[in-house]
Length: 250
Image 1 (cartoon, rainbow, N blue to C red):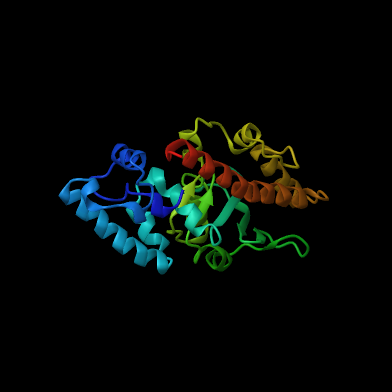
Image 2 (image 1 turned 120 degrees about the vertical axis):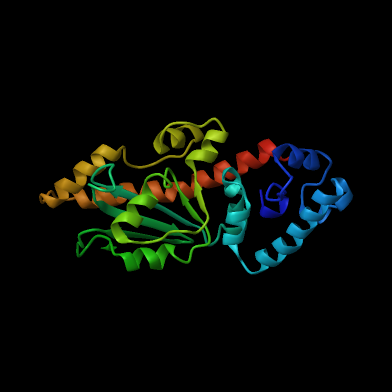
């Protein structure tokens, strides 16, 4: 699914109307003609398409992030996939007011970087507000799993960062496909393999074990965090393809 397949950002065009357009063979902006809808809505669609082409040429993801209903922001992925930033954090607990971010991994393009709260000379990079801004601040699209409720509030509270790019929280598109549960449960259901069998509770233990001097604990925590993050890209591909196939007539 690409932005150019979409009409739901336009006032007066809901999912049902968009589906009707697709069923008529109007599955792309290039195929739209104003008389396919009423005069007022037809003009609105034409205006949106005209502005949308210009915004796409300029790479203005934020325009589309504001225009699309939140449940459809996943449709931005195909257009901005090369610059999308996948990220995941580990913490010492669930409260952004009482607990600490321990590691942050960002996967963008061919590069995966991990930032660690207490700099280890051999593992990761220092976790600072500047590091997060550098790696996430210019990304046109952010992709997480449960990041709207967890990762983003934690980073904003602890590091004072503002992450305002369009955000695909994969937990919600997964639910549209009937995929529920945590990230690892969904990975297994769609056939994504991972190396370590570690969960969030073990990630907390590993951080404290590292602080206590246990050899290899930080390396295992970082590997787990990186697996979570890199797998987000694979899951995003699966979800985007399945949602497209379910919705757009062949």
